[in-house]
Structure formats: C-alpha cells, structure tokens
Length: 302
Image 1 (cartoon, one colour):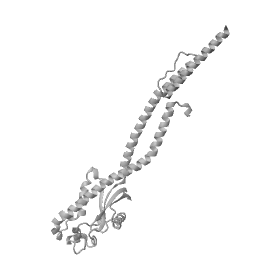
Image 2 (cartoon, helix red, strand yellow):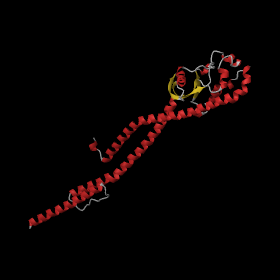
Image 3 (spheres, rainbow, N blue to C red):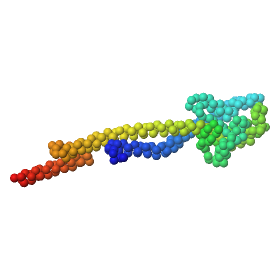
C-alpha cells in the first residue's frame, strides 16, 4: 500500500505513528508521575491543616483552658478540650470551597468522647506510631463504604500536663466531665504517650481527577505541538523536496522526448541540488552524444 503513496503522505503516516506510539508509551508514565505529584500536593495541604489544628489545640490547652478551669467543677465546657476546639475550627474551615472535601479526625485509642474512637484501620496507624517513635507521618489510600479516600496522618501525643487533669484517672477528672461521659473511657493517659493520630482525608477521586486534568492538559499541548510540527514538516517537504522533484521529473520527461532547450535549475546546495546538477551533467552528456551521432550520420551521408 505504501508504494502507491507519495512522499508527503508517507512522512505524514510515519509522524502520526510516532505520535500515537509516543503518547501511548508516555501516557502510562505521565499518569503515574502526575498522580504522585497530585498526592504530594494534597499531602502538603493536609500537613498544613494538621499543623494548624495542632496550633489550635495548643492555644486551647495553654490559654483557653486555664481561664475556664474553675468552672469545670460545676459545669463541663467542651471549649476547654483541645480536640473539640480543633474539630470546631476545622468544620468552619470546611465551609470554604477550597477545603470542603477535606475531613479531619483525631482517631484515639481510648477517647473520652466515643466520636473520636479509632476504627480498625485507624488503630493500625496509631499502633505504627506507638511502635516506631521516629515515624512522623503516614499516608495512602483506603476503601470505605462511601468510596476510596486518600489520607495523611501524624501521631497525636500527650504533650501538655493540663491534658492529664482530664485523662489521668477518674478521681482527678472534673466531676462535670464524669457526669457527661462516664468514668469508663478516656483515662490512663501518660505524658508524651501517643494516644491517637491526627488524620486528614480527602476523596481519592480528587487526587485522580487532579492528575487526569494535568495529564489531559499536557497531552493536549504535546498533541497540538506535534500536529503543528507535522504541518510544518509537510510544508517544508513540499517546498524543498516534492516541488523540486516534480520540476526535475517534468524536465527529464521533456529531455527524454528531445527538447534539449530546457534546463535543470539548481535551487539549493543540498541533496536535491546535487541531483539537479547530476541531471544537468546527464543532459549535457546526452546533447554531446546526440551531436556526435549527427556528425557521424552527416559524414556517412557525404
């Protein structure tokens, strides 16, 4: 089939094959790379949010709690709990478009409020932090009934003495807290002990969607550049190769029929120009040969 195509068509087919093969081969690598970049981008945002929530916890523990500690004997105030403050601040943050898909949980092994109880998967994360003290964060994907999510977690450590007023023993804890939550959970904590994990999660489709958008944009740009390249190559090929070859073919056909007045014009110094020079020498040789033949025929006639 290729034998019946002209040079321009052959070059176009070759370039299209290269484009298709190149995009297919690079698509897999590009998708993986951009997905990893999307994970890193979301991880960076997640870490900033965790650090922000840690700051809220510290502020509550060091500045809010001391001001309200006297009221705890008669009335339990959730605003004195660092975890409560962090959750409330994060829920306000989630009302913005930028962070509405993010979720925050302080997954705790033995929480006072069972809302913060770590599930089986989260318990494994907390245990990893407890068993490996130098482990600062973990991230990855997990499946839940509502769909896959991407998460990033950091250890939640008892870093303030004030936390032990509510979590050391039921006897030390405020009676108003015992009345609300009971004495069965949230006790036995120790200073500097890892009791849970701060976990930021986002639907996995956000990561994949972000990577796909970047992939599509890059592939679109590359395809556009390649198509423009094909057009430019075809234009160059037509002007520098196809047209000169057609001109030489037409002149060669005229010379072959005896029209020696036509000339092979050398338009360049490349291979096409060298071919024109070769045809021109051939034309001169042919003219000389025909003249010798005529002289020989003329001499024989005399």
